[in-house]
Length: 130
Image 1 (cartoon, rainbow, N blue to C red):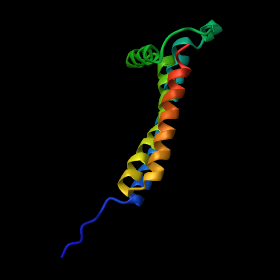
Image 2 (image 1 turned 120 degrees about the horizontal axis):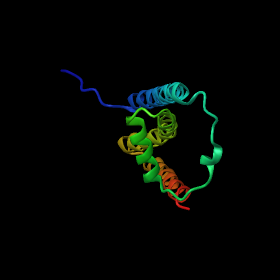
Image 3 (image 1 turned 180 degrees about the horizontal axis):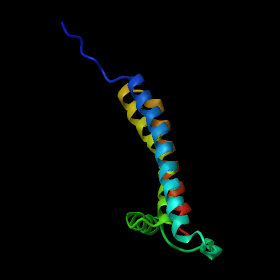
Image 4 (image 1 turned 135 degrees about the vertical axis):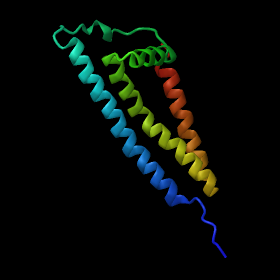
């Protein structure tokens, strides 16, 4: 008789560990490449720090702008893409944990994880809507 293998907690822990490890490396690599591209194109220019003034763009406009710039190979947009990937890495870890707890039928931790996800969504919503 062949024993059926179940997808278990150790498998999820391995996936979550790899997500964190590779998520950080990929985000740092994208930001590093963006830094090189930026310096190649703008290395001799004097930086204009007025871009740090507060503006009223929403998160979707910012992400769309960064996406289009990264596709075109803009160094600053690639750096921002790396930063966005770095922020998304732990968020994806929380989502994977939710699925892990659902498979384990550990409903206390499902509830706690859902509260964390709601807090993240509220923080992002209020953080970008001035």
